[in-house]
Length: 204
Image (cartoon, rainbow, N blue to C red):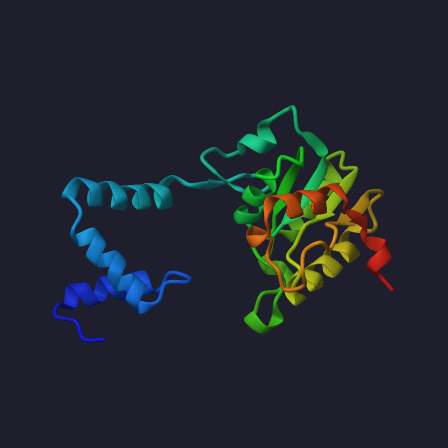
């Protein structure tokens, strides 16, 4: 792709580094911004700078938040004895949109993936174990994507958590293998949460 401006090329390169954005899409986005009023572009860049500078991660569940404790963890109406373990914030949003879950969350920040150099120590697993020790938890739902990495992480978590006197369950497999939670429709995901099954059934 030939560029008439180095500045244009640099901007396209940066947009092209975003997930799911190819060079043509990046160029279209950059040209769109160039055609916008200065006030709109300044508001756009300011929102990104503000996000990076002020965003926090909940000290309890590690969900993205504006405060040290996110709204979900701070709400007394939630069932704090029920913890749903997810990969990232997108999964929290997907489950919340189902209106089928009233517990709290624990965001791992990824999945175990040796091929990508991601091990248990890279995730918020130790923090989850600490919550088991310090909080009155009755059940942990392992709501991870139906992928090889998801299943590997579920199995590892089960081994870490089975020593505690709690129920360990997984979401029902109405979700096809290889599917990621953020792309599952709300009805299917809601039913999968509601009809979760004990994980012990899946362990040989």
